[in-house]
Length: 232
Ligand SMILES: *Cc1c(COP(=O)(O)O)cnc(C)c1O
Image (tube, rainbow, N blue to C red):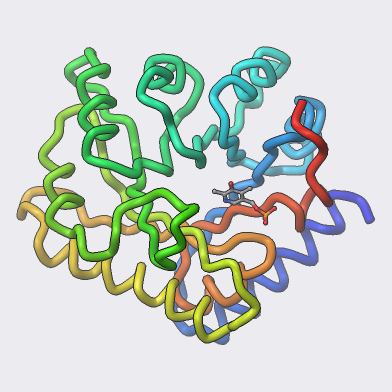
C-alpha cells in the first residue's frame, strides 16, 4: 500500500469514529516520523501531510536540515524535553506538545525573549498512572493552571498517551479523563485567557477510541509508516 492509500484508509476510519462519538470535532492528524529518515518526512508532506511530530531534539535537528524550506509542515515536539535543550527546541519546532512540568514551562517562558512571541504548547498529563510515562498527574490542576500565567507560552490544550493495554475500557477512561480535565481547567482559567481546545490523544493502536472520546489531534506513526526503524 502506498502512503496515499494508507492515508485514505485512515481518514475514513477517523470519520467513522467521529460519527460514532458524536463530538463533531475537527481533528488534526500529526504524522509521527521519529526514527524514519528525512525522506519519509518529505514524502509525507508531498502526500498532503501538514503536521509532523518528532520526539527527540537532536534527531529532529539532523533531519530538519535535510528538508526543503517550502512547503514546510508544522513541526510538533511530542517527547520529553530536557531543560538543556530548550533553546534548540525553540529554534526547531513550531510547537511543544509535551510540556510535562511547571519547571519546564518556566524554562521555556524564560527563553522566549521576543515580547510578542507565544509558542503554542500542550500540557502532557499522565492519565494512566504508568510510572514510565512523564506528565502531570491528573490531580495537579492547580499547577497546570498556574502555567497559564506565564508569558511566552500559549497553552492550547492537553496531551496524553493512553495506557499500554488491550483493555478498551481502561483506554477509553484514560481519554475521557483528559477531556474532563480540559473542561475543569477551562472552568478555572483566568477570564481573559483563550479557551483551551486541543485534546491530543490517540496513536496508531487507539486513535479511534480517542476520537470517540473527543480527540482533536491524533499522533500516528506505525499506522502511516510501518514499524519503526532502528534509531538513526
Ligand atoms: C511514537 C509516538 C507516537 C506514535 O506512535 P504509533 O503507535 O507508532 O502511532 C505518538 N505519540 C508519541 C508521544 C510518541 O512518542
